[in-house]
Image (cartoon, rainbow, N blue to C red):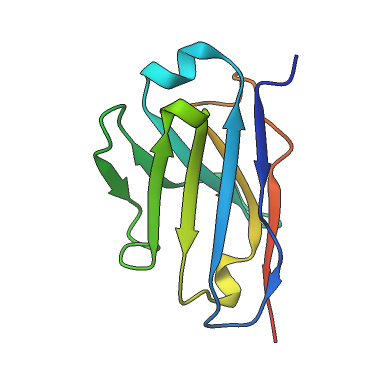
Amino acid sequence: QVQLVESGGALVQPGGSLTLSCEFSKVIYKFIPMAWYRQAPGKQRELVAHITRGGDATYADSMKGRCLIDRDNAKDTVYLQMNSLKPLDTAVYYCNKFPAGSSDFWGQGTQVTVSS
């Protein structure tokens, strides 16, 4: 049973923008905090941003001011809008509950590559 499906990743130039989407299929996700995470090559997965059920958002310092997390529980979707992208933002981006660990289910993620 597929629970989390991320999409929207692409190859973009530095300074560009992207909006990622995450569709979730488990009802429980509507009622709990959700988050976006990312994993760059050779690095551990890290938190990018998380959002409460009510829409209060918190951002990692590395992305503060450059991204916006949002959710639409009616559409079972969480979004991540990213601006002013840098090569260091290159990673596979995942959504999941917050907090989430290695023992939790993870989707396949969506690849974001920032390069000229």
